[in-house]
Length: 128
Image 1 (cartoon, helix red, strand yellow):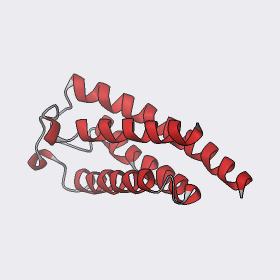
Image 2: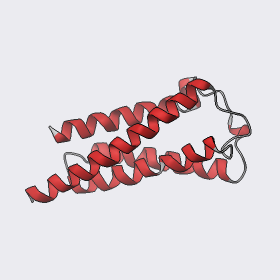
Image 3: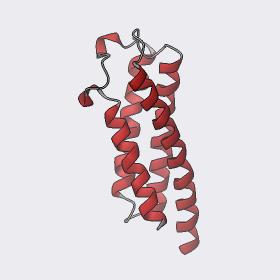
Image 4: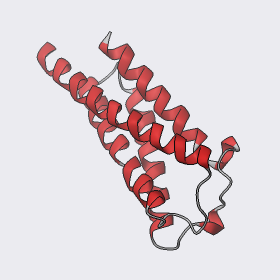
């Protein structure tokens, strides 16, 4: 049951992450509007976090302890971009209301992902 909930939350995280990219068509800001210092750096962290969440989702059944660590680090890497966007350091253009709302939901899902990953890690340690 914990495996399934953990996996579902990570899938929701991935969906929200994709919705926050220009590929989904909701994000209207372009790469040219990113700030040179923090914009590109936080975008890189965001994509590294996305890759770690995908790796975590793949490894849930194989190595639960590894999956939980990857999920925690991946979810934590969302917050620099979130904070940079809300402080105006991510882009020269402001985020649309839809993107701002999705970013808040994504932050909440990232927190839930971290909490579930910690619980999943404890449960997998007990079963060993």
